[in-house]
Amino acid sequence: MDDAPDVGELVPPDRTLLGPGPVDVHPRVLRAMATPLVGYLDDYYIDVMDDLQELLRYVFQTENEYTFAVSGTGSAAMETALSNLLEPGETALVPSNGYFGQRMGAVAERAGAEVVTVDAPWGEPLDPTDVEAAFEQHQPTVFGFVHGETSTGVQQHSVAELTEIAHAHDGYVVADTVPALGGVEFRTDAWDVDVVYTGAQKCLSAPPGVSPITFNDRAMEKVRNRETQVRSWYLDAADVWEYWGEERNYHHTGPISTSYAVREALRLIAEEGLEETWARHRRVGGALKAGVEALGPGLHVDDEYWLPTLNPVRVPDGVDDGRVIERMMDEHGIEIVGGLGALAGDIFRVGCMGHSARPAKIAGFIAAFGSVLESEGADVDTDAAAAAVSRGLAE
Ligand code: PLP
Image (tube, rainbow, N blue to C red; front, side, top):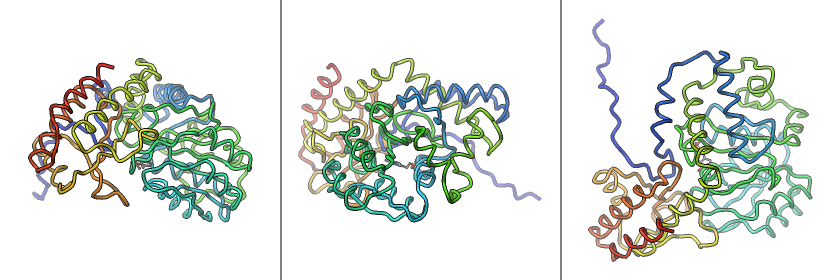
């Protein structure tokens, strides 16, 4: 038979990834992926899993025993959190102020929960008073919230206040930190969050496919005492723990190469220091923000809730966002993306995460973005933008 497909060698183009993830990864992470495979129960891989757990406890800022990585992207971790904590008929309270908060609702519904929402406009965080009122009204078992909402670029502050409200009503709290963990301050234990998950391809700066999660003892006790089986066999946390915990029993084949990559990415964060990593994202993201403000369009988010890792840049009047995104890619090799849901057409989403949160990348973005917007007829001040970025980076 001579019908073998003739596809070319893999030569990915050289991009600067400034969208909502995946983001650029450090060469050391790429090299880790290219190292030899071992078996999923090889002593070497067990050590890698131990290292991962230790490093993850550091970035989650937790001492939780049940800290591991789900084989799958951030949505798999979301599904693990919600479908293990919720039993059919229980009530889940989720936010309506963003695309991923709404996804939490969709996932909770498939877990058999009654879903109720706490509302805020897209572009604003939840108000703890509204969360309190929703607890009074609905008595939910689980409250899920998004610490950094990728669709709006809003950071949810007052996390400890939210968990206090939930716990006063015997509720469990699930935090989605997918575009935030490792980029902005998050303290699982100090803020008393029951379950926290993230993705690998955002601020952790690794390839997608392995998603960290942590359950505190209280949450895991609820999981272990379920009256009904978790609907997903693959994502049953107590069963998956057989592989990550002391037993080390086969549950499913560990994602060897991606785990190597995440381990290396987390080592890089540990070497830099977590607080220094948060400070770098704030400084470099701050320079990006200052740059787009001086350029003209500015951000579609109040300074108070600004998430340094995901910047919702306003689309200037009369400019076609799709054309700008396409030209940024074609002419400059820079990936940015458009708005989602209620903000489609109104904003560009510009990420500043992990290895992409570097001064040269952000300065290059502002120069390219300014020149594309200018040639699309927008009224922009490219000199002021360049100066603002330099000042921001020097801070
Ligand atoms: N939650 C948030 C806040 C996200 O931004 C994303 C992805 O962008 C997800 C969940 C889902 O993650 P994934 O696309 O890796 O499945």
